Image (cartoon, rainbow, N blue to C red; front, top):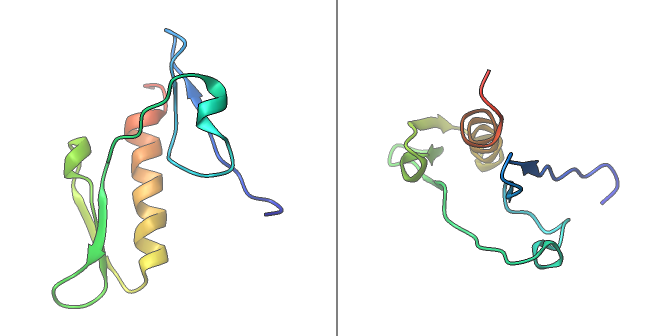
Length: 86
């Protein structure tokens, strides 16, 4: 996976957070938990949506491609749930 990136954000209390990925073995960092932050699903009229309601966010889309919905999902979660304020 040349060029692949997985970001971890370390909070002031030392807790690491990030979008789930398999590049980093979360268990190697200590106790880990995974929670659902969103759902990418087929849209009723075609395309794909990213439902961010589990994280208090909007539903994005529809997007013509699932990959576009996944990218929008990751971008929203990174900007609104993982990045420090400001």
